[in-house]
Length: 174
Image (cartoon, rainbow, N blue to C red; front, side, top):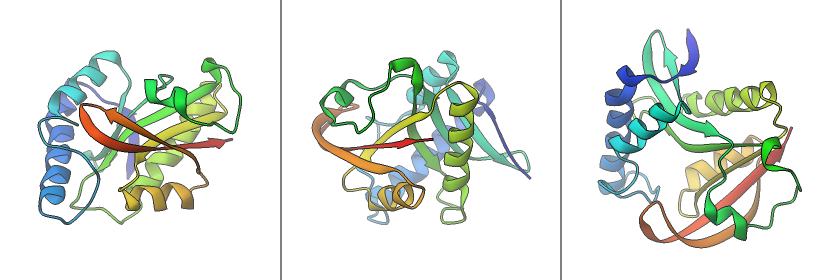
């Protein structure tokens, strides 16, 4: 059974393990995400989000299989994006750093997490959804397109400590 909940301190190691799986696959050339080990994301990324109360996990039968940060914080780079929808900050929910364990990728966990994100946004009065990914992350771009997200801009940036990121900004109105 799949469930979603706010992450707590006990989840840090599992979230960091998923980050490590992705970094290893990136370094091996299995995936192209644009992340860099020891820069982003790191165990501190998970710790900080859990402390702020905006990290969520997806569990199957009590095992964490995916995680992401969900909040109303638009990253600074979003100011340069050409958003289709004009909305006030309190109407916008943002999904950050969605990760799925590489051991079970391709089985719909990312889609289910985005579905949870959309329901969570509506429950919190947000009809405008925003997220981003690296232009080289074709798997994420394809998933988000399939789920109805529109790529509105590509912003050149120094993002999360990584130089040369071409940040794809996506949005959807519920």
